[in-house]
Length: 116
Image 1 (spheres, helix red, strand yellow):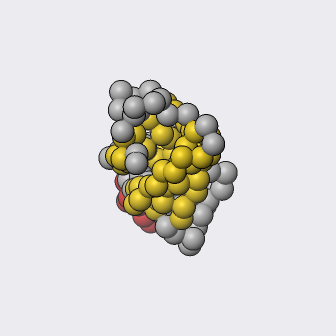
Image 2 (image 1 turned 45 degrees about the vertical axis):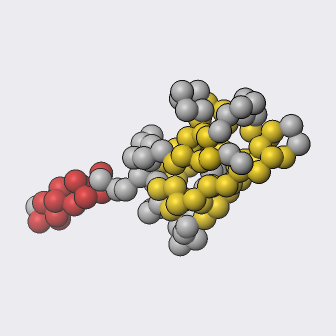
């Protein structure tokens, strides 16, 4: 009974794990598109709970590309991953980036990346 009460007491803490946070992002023209590199941090807890991707969107919310992250990064935090050949419409001056957790939640705040 004591163990059950202890587990129930921890349940709210486990459910409130922080979403991924984008610390930095860079964009470089590459061929016909752009190469986007994103540095993020997340309290990855293993295969059941980890940052599993990030998405580039235009300012209207249209998806321009998605970078899937295939495994937890555990103690390798923060980490940077890139996505090449992102097609960004001519004249676009900035994009939004958001990160996703394997529990289906998204970063609380989009990262705004200015394009040079």
